Structures are given as C-alpha cells and as structure tokens.
Image (cartoon, rainbow, N blue to C red):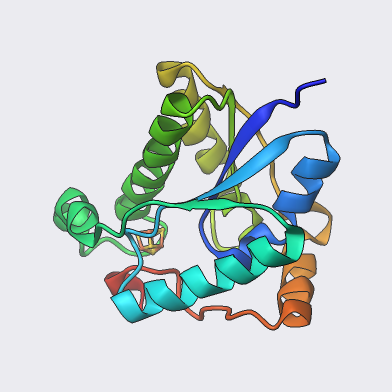
Amino acid sequence: MKKTKLLLHICCAPDATVPWPELIQEGYDVTGFFYGGNIHPKEEYDKRAVALASVCKYFEVEAIYQSYSPQLWFDATVKMKDEPEHGKRCVKCFELQLESAAEYAQKNGFTHLSTTLTISPHKDPELINEIGKNICQRIGLLWVEKIWRKDNGFKKSVEKSKQLGIYRQNYCGCLYSI
Ligand code: SF4
C-alpha cells in the first residue's frame, strides 16, 4: 500500500532527530524540508546544513534544502527587527518558514505537513500548531499537529544529537538572536 506523503519542516538537524523516526514509525513517508533563510550568517547556515546531511544519512532519509535566500527573510521581518525573541518577529518567521514548506509540499505531491519546531522548550507549540494549521487550510494540505517536546522529546533529541556527533547551535538562528 502506498504510504501517505508527509513533508517535515525542519528548523534544525538536532530538533529533527526525534520527530523524523517517530513519524516514520507512525507510517508516513517522510521527507525533510529546510528553509534556512532565517539563519545568519551563511557560515552558520552551512554548519546546520552539514548537520542535517548527517541526520539524513543516519536515518536513510532525504531532505529538501530551500535555496538560501536571507534577503527575502530580512525584507519580510525588517519592521520587527527590534522585537524581543518570542515577539512578533518570531511569529512572522514561523509563518515564512511554514509557508515556504507548504508551498513546496503542495507543488510536489505531499498531502501532509508537520514541523520540528515544537520540540523546543523556548517556543510556543500551540502558536506554531495554529500557524501551521491555518496555512495548511489555506493551501489545501493536512496539518499533522504535534508537540514534540512532550515525553522528554527535547532531552531525547539532545542525547541523540550527541550520539550522532552533530553540530548543535547555541542561538535560535537569525542575526537578532545571536
Ligand atoms: S529568534 Fe528564531 S524564531 Fe525568532 S525571528 Fe529569529 S530565527 Fe526566527
């Protein structure tokens, strides 16, 4: 039987180490999607891309790398540059990342979308799920709602990342969060 095609939006490789195998276990055919335009500078983007490649190799899965377009991200968030972390700039950032993933999913035969973002203890999972659900409704996809940090999800992802020896960043990603 053909499996359901799910595109997993990936904020960073360490955060994908728990959601990816769990979604496969649930029976989805899962492909990753790395937006990356919010990551600054380019050297940091490269480190995170290499870490994602290691995760893909380990789980024998594939990820799509959106072409690195930081200017689009800066243009869309410039009015919110002085917002604190968790403020309006982050809401816009989640929208940009998930819209980009949803558009790719819709054009490439995926029916379902989810994100690794809700594994972070620093982010609001209800808000992220709400944004994802709204985008999916608008674009004609099904949102797979998850709160990955439940059941020690974040701790498990830290342990798995250490086991794989992959790079784990110490800031969220954008220039303003450094
Ligand atoms: S702090 Fe993180 S979520 Fe917020 S705008 Fe920057 S990269 Fe995006």
